Length: 253
Image (cartoon, rainbow, N blue to C red; front, side, top):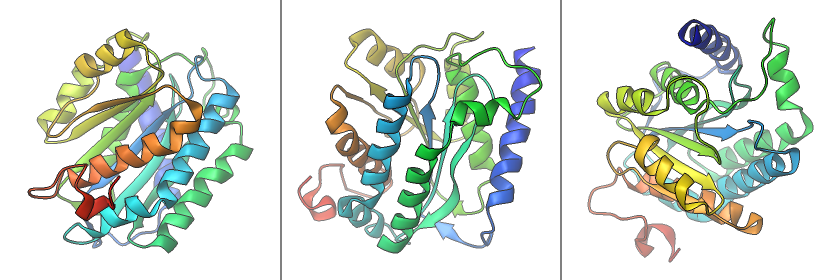
């Protein structure tokens, strides 16, 4: 039952992304990075707003652009969606970020989503609705499908899962994680909060692949900085002989 519903949701989401993207399939990027933002029952409207504001600020941060420009091609494929147990509203369809102007376009798209009720938007896409459960495995599979159909060629595929709860729908996230990692992908995690058990859950059952990591955040004011550090780590993991704390790349982060 869950597998059939998941396939239907993937189809709906991919149609949405495809309709919003008009990018040349010949474009190459150093990495394709897709970020999934938790909008399950544990995320109230204020927390969602903090996710969106922090993400937009991070995309604009010059330290992220410095990391991007350190790559061989100097650009990344970038996309963001929201997830729970149901349809996945697009926040930013696939786009290239290769300049501060590109970053500004992405940041404004993220900020614009504050004006939309993502839950109601998701409900409109299905005939029945069972609530906003925490379905990390489905979020990983959706992000995996997005990366498989990304309009950019890249040597590295990265999924970022942002959330604060365990998968509570059917199977846990490990099987979906393992399938993606087996194809060479990397899943990183950003835990909202400092719950040691939740951090361990993400470490054991969510993240995986080359250079994978889990980060946590305990203050709303630190949201943007957490996203900055996360994106820099996503990006520089692909660079030879570099680390996420190399001041030559990130200006002394």
